Amino acid sequence: MKRIFVLVLIALLSVNAYSQKKKPVTKKTGATSGLAKVDNLVAEVKKGNFQVTINENGKEKDAMIVKAADAKFAPTNCKLTAFTANGTKLYLLTWTEMVQIKTNKKTEDITNVYSVIYEIANKKQVFSNTQTTNHITEIVSLGGTAATETQEKIRRDGFEFILNPDGSVTQKSKNQQNRWVYDVAKMEFVAKK
Image (tube, rainbow, N blue to C red; front, side, top):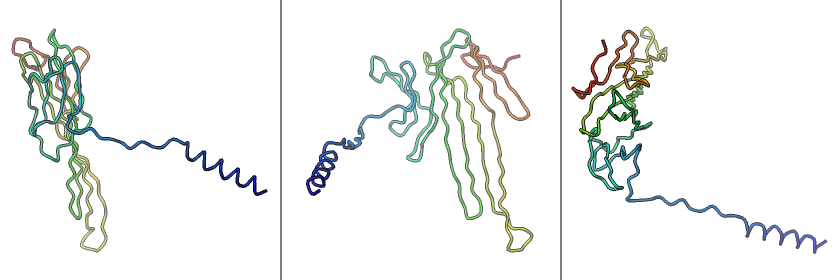
């Protein structure tokens, strides 16, 4: 009986010694990874700016600054998309920024969705759209008594941005819809008639 116990103990210890061990996670430092990439373009935060970097042969050739970025700047859902409008190759950069404003009785969760279209050949911004959604949660006093109620509101500002398959742009809101097409001569989007 002692032999069996000793053999089982040795078997358990040997299995434990030969099992796989979890490798420590190493973080790369110094290298800036892009938030979004397409063709030779990279959207990234670099030197205090949110920018679209134009690379050539793997090296940075030029950059277009989208906006100044502070330490709190943390874009999410960042995407770069190439498309063609009226025979011109354009690039759509979209990203989302979230801000929370909190007080004792009120919390605001603000979501800003940005959409910007660039013509890289001329390094020009040809269209821009911002959509803001504000989710407000507020504790309201009921008629001077100690009783309170939590109220929620959602406010929307700006237009929803839609890139159509033909390269045109549609902006939608609750009451309005705008359609834009790219004018090659003016190098900008103009209202479709």
